[in-house]
Length: 145
Image (cartoon, rainbow, N blue to C red; front, side, top):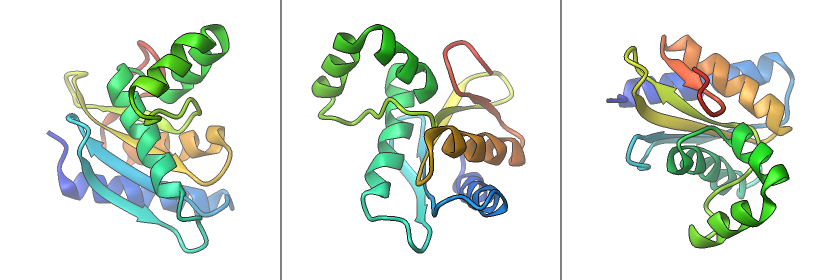
């Protein structure tokens, strides 16, 4: 079970990585395995829509069972499916890197983190570093981790 303290540490580490890389201001959302928001922060200067984007990246990763990098790749190969999945979920999935599953020591999914604010690849770099900072594993794509 993902703990609030871990979620807060993930957010702080993701934002710190973003600052170290001089990225645009980030918004970071951490969800538990059931898709419920545990913690969220939006840096000063990040647009207010960034909450929805970060949340949708994390929620989409949980809902599909793989990270949003994989969702982006599938959108390129199977655009009709991803459009239908997005419509079926009320637009709650964003096919852009930055939504990553969080795994425990047994490789069980215990939550997800999503970041938005810079390019998707940079958002993903920040969340991967943040998950590592709390000693958990990440799955940014299908079958990775």
